[in-house]
Amino acid sequence: NAGVTQTPKFRVLKTGQSMTLLCAQDMNHEYMYWYRQDPGMGLRLIHYSVGEGTTAKGEVPDGYNVSRLKKQNFLLGLESAAPSQTSVYFCASSYIANEQFFGPGTRLTVL
Amino acid sequence: GQQVMQIPQYQHVQEGEDFTTYCNSSTTLSNIQWYKQRPGGHPVFLIQLVKSGEVKKQKRLTFQFGEAKKNSSLHITATQTTDVGTYFCIAGGYQKVTFGTGTKLQVIP
Image (cartoon, rainbow over all chains, first blue to last red; front, top):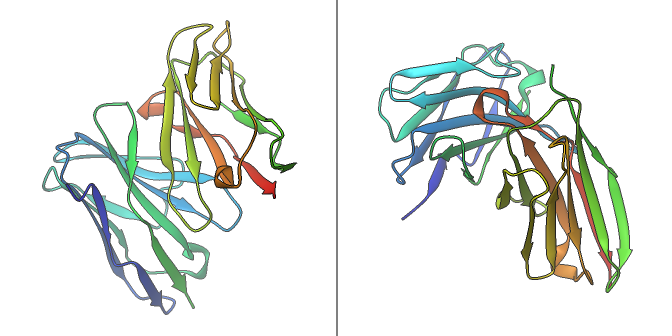
């Protein structure tokens, strides 16, 4: 089992560019989450999903969109990147609301 | 709304000393989870506590959930350099996923 994987690992964008981060899990988990972690800070929930075809807003959803078309994948989109979105993005999945399994993270820099 | 404070924010200990971090909530929690994040790494699940007054042990780590289910603690006995990292708590279920601010532990050999 690969667990939770994230693509890409690193990315540099210019202000205004768009991109999509992909999260994939092979544990048949219903719940998936996207977090951001700024330097020296804790994690903040952006969006989450409790099942295929469903998404919901977390603590800091502005500037991001998500989709969960397949149970194993959770996509995070930035339509028009801003420097304030420079961060490390973590995806996680869980069986209902139990232990969360985290991916290795995507380090995003917006210039 | 639900707020979770974690103390201390930083802790430096000499190897072999004990270490404790606390998560305190303003509201009653349904459960609490503890995670460890090594420098440059991702959070890794340690334990979940559900019952009032629950105590769980993992080798040198002892986790406790308060009687009122508003606070929790993680205690490490005789720290080792491998314990270095940031320890987070997550309070509540998925609908109110609230991360504690984290305690960064440094262990001096």
